[in-house]
Length: 291
Image 1 (cartoon, rainbow, N blue to C red):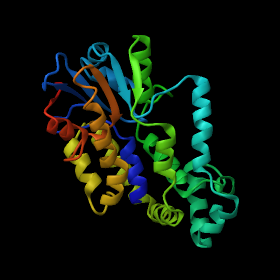
Image 2: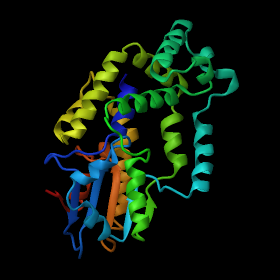
Image 3: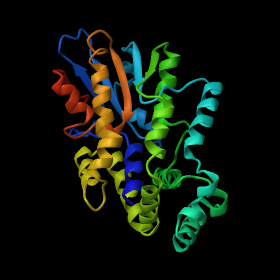
Image 4: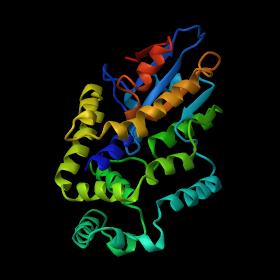
């Protein structure tokens, strides 16, 4: 369940101590402020309407920095093909071969219930790919009236394109695919089995995380993420969250002094001592919520 919860947390996007989604980055010699905005990959686009000033903040910047830059349709297709290759198991190591029979049967029941699919049609996928799919589907259940098939991250990039604002990505799709799907298979199996053996707990965690997101409760979300029973290990947090935060913050050292940028990242990257907010503050910037 912990791996599924980690994936859900990576989907979450908006929280801070002041219950705000949008933060201003100023000071440290900058002439104009930059901004950082937390997103949730399955949140309704209409949440933008509840954030006064966000469009003005976006339009005041010269670049939008995202986790991954959304490319043209053709580039997106090529990117999907590359990413898919990381999600696939080798033919001699399909799920029914690397999982115990009872665990495979249990997984089949969960897949039928949650996805309406036959497990044999999905046994070519790595356990982490199954976990990610379950996480996304369960997260979507708790967002009523989803008003767009476009993810919030992509929507912000489309707004930037309409305003002729440049778009840059911190990471490549290949990097993220390797990070998610290239951990040892035995660990992936163990995590997936833990998830399917306690689906009620998993769904409760995702529901609670969603509710905390919608109420913008950073303290609650961070506490949930780091709870030994509901959260994930420090090793996984370091690999998937904190290490990346430090890399991004280091890159921004060369960007913020000269450019005014609008940063769009998942909310899991914002809180904590190694979150983006504190890392930027330690660089000397004033980072404050837009009320």
